[in-house]
Image (cartoon, rainbow, N blue to C red):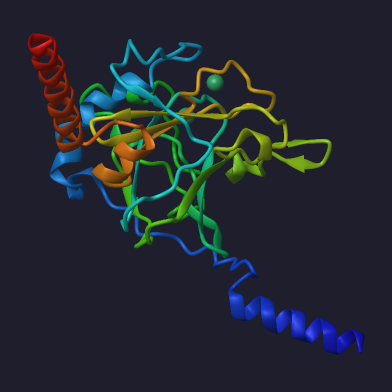
Length: 274
Ligand SMILES: [Ca+2]
Ligand SMILES: [Ca+2]
């Protein structure tokens, strides 16, 4: 009786897709900045303002960007998001970046984007390298991609995701060296602070020229809260980024302006008649 009940429960769960699908942690193909879309290449140098030095608080005014609420990062339109490595300031930690995508009851978790988000010392001829990468690192012996340091602007396409997909990005501090632990709990920091093991905010995001710029603080307990230990630019598409940042589409802004002018004219006319 009990088994039959469990079997039907399992069948129901499978049928509705309620079971979480832990996809194999297969590596994405990491591409170079030379292979990046032109609009990204054109503004790549701008993104260095989001990295900066340790302990520097970034005010949205100083970086001419709009801060984005990360508690619900949901795609309004289908898109294949791209994640670009911008830089990092960490001296000792070598962090891993994963993503999680929830579409209805389907959950993709444990997808490794970058296994070692250290700046590659070999990229030092890149213009303004030291501002993107004040503390670059050599590759660890015996490690292969995605567990190798990155060049500025290295990126992956994380695949086609349908509208309604909720995105989360998770930083696993110093994962390549075994990760960080407190009382036996591994540090994995996502966008929702309530789900973080220290219950603290570890990520901030800004809307900048139709990209989201995501910065992480990688120390347990919130560290120095500069949120620039590792920095990424995320392309979720112009419309999705504007929706996430509550930036009106130009057409919507123009329509709102037109409505405001019309109502003002009506009021004037009425006043003239009165
Ligand atoms: Ca580093
Ligand atoms: Ca920090």
